[in-house]
Length: 495
Image (tube, rainbow, N blue to C red; front, side, top):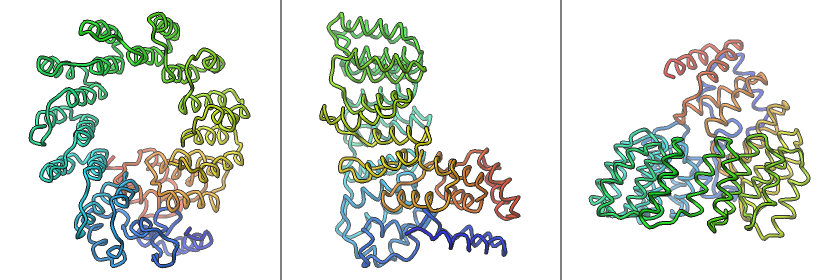
């Protein structure tokens, strides 16, 4: 259910009269934030099991408090837990680690239920994404006690440590593989090297490789990891040298090897080198694949060489895939050829038996919104909502939210979109979406609503930008919302 717009205005007027900001801060019965706080009844036939659980999770609570709320709730206890249900709940709270961990701990306390390694892996990833490293490491140790540690979990943990700038801890986990019941072999070595290289620690990766290569022989993938790493840190000469090193170990550079370097030159807008490498690949018997051509086309569009990009399909000697078509739709949109872009979805993709994905629809929605063709954008939204092969994600709605704010349609239409996101598709707002909404609502003279979203954002341990705080602070001061101003100033001091 959506909080009725007329009630929202009554509530806002009450706020203005009473200045009861603490009451306003604690009330989450607004649009999308917690529309499920309206005492849901599972027996009314309108709520699924996942909706019921979501409705019982208090906003901004600690994981211990979430656990207690679920533990005391008889409705939750009456629901038969399944691994699918828990997986869906963790996905719903993937950007809210406290709620996710509370649900995770409550589920494992249920009699007859045991987490799978896949569910543990998901929780490891959520904690790592939230940079809760100590808790993530403790969870790995817990998995080890149950014999549930997989290389996938180790890979997630190492990548999260490296992403948080703690690459030494990633190496330490690799060194401790035996304590987790895993081996130091080619597969695990490549996972570590890939982790380090993707985080720009290529030299450290080389040190690990040199230390291990005597008893863990590399394969072609090992060298492709380094080629990618050197290109990532913009040291293409080392990447080209790695091509020769690869040959020295008896491996021939492949399409991936060349495509990685082509991608580097694309990022440098050095398209003469791109075409040179494409010709070299073909001369050596390696036909560029669809990924290579997609990369080149995207880079040309980014470099404002749209017409040149639209010539790429004529050069291709391989079958297009979904990602290629998505890039083509984007290029046609940039060229202002909307009908041709829509024809790709309606005609070309079906003719090659290529199924669209969420990004296909997202590209069209973004294109129509950018050109102010709002109705066409909403038509595409209806198509993806009715699709049997893909569903909307946050990026589907982002340009639509932006379009609503830009056109001043911040009442029923914006409310309906947010309701769809939260209740129909179980999508959580990220930092960018919160910023968009807060800024847009402030410009629309609806800072009370913006302040509610700000409170939810803080409750999810998301750090707002200083610019967002400054804008909202100025707006609430103009509305004489003194307590709100004081709280925002307190947050700003911590940024």
